[in-house]
Amino acid sequence: MSEPANRRGAPKGGLTRRGLFRGVGTATLLGGCVDRTSTTDPGGHAVVDDATAPAELGPDRVPVRFTLNGESVEAAVEPRTTLLDALRLDLDTTGPKLVCDRGSCSACLVLVDGLPRNSCMMLAHDVAGREVTTVEGLSKGDELSALQHAFVRHDALQCGFCTSGMLISCAALLRRRPKGEPLTATQVQDAIAGNLCRCGTYPHVVAAVLEVASGKTERAGA
Ligand code: FES
Ligand code: FES
Figure 1 (cartoon, rainbow, N blue to C red):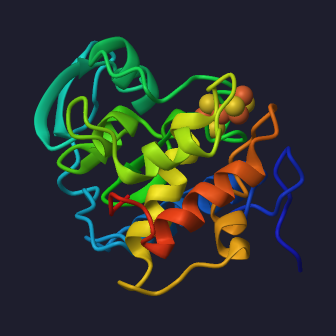
Figure 2 (cartoon, rainbow, N blue to C red):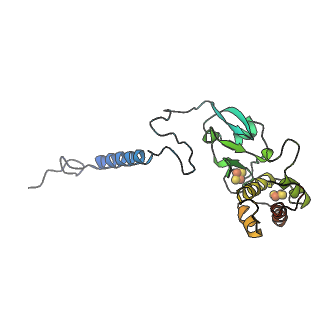
C-alpha cells in the first residue's frame, strides 16, 4: 500500500518541493566551495580562498596597495570602485580614458603584471600587490619612449581619446615579441583589434609600431 500524501501532494516522509530546492541549493553551494580550493590563478597569482577571505570588505573605503608605474601607491577606495576610477579620481593618473565603461573600446587599457587589461572592467582591489603600468609609465618623466615618438612622427593620433590605450596595446606587443624578431602588419593589427579609434588612425599606428620594431629609429624600446 502506498504512503499517504501530505497536503502538498508529496509522499509523507518523501521529498517535498521545498526540500528539493533546499537540497539543490546546498549541493550547488558545496560544489562551489570544492571548486575554490585553488590558491593560484592561471597566471600564478595568489588567490584568497574562502578559508582566509574576510567575511566582508567595505562598504566603506578600504585601503589597497599596489605598484603604479614603478612606485608603491595606496588608495582608500570602496570595494565596488573600478581600477579606472581609482587611477583617475584617487591617484590622479588620467592617461587611461573613460569612454564606453563596459569593456568594448580599450581607451582605459593598462598593463597589469605586463598584460593589457581594461581598467574599467577590473576592481581596484583586484590589483592589490600587483604591478600596474599606465601610459604615463611608458615614458621616463618628460622623455617620451621610442614608441611615443614614432606615434608623433607617423601622425598616429588625432583627437587622442584612444591613444593611451593604443600605446599600451602596442607597447605590450613590442615587449612580448622575442628580442630582435621582426613584426608583421598583421601582428600589429591583431594586437590593436580591441582598440576602437573613431578617427581612423589605424594605418598610422601600424606604421609607427613597425618602424619601432624594425629598430630603424634613433631610439629603441617600447
Ligand atoms: S572605457 Fe574601458 S573598455 Fe571602454
Ligand atoms: S585618435 Fe581619435 S579616437 Fe583615435
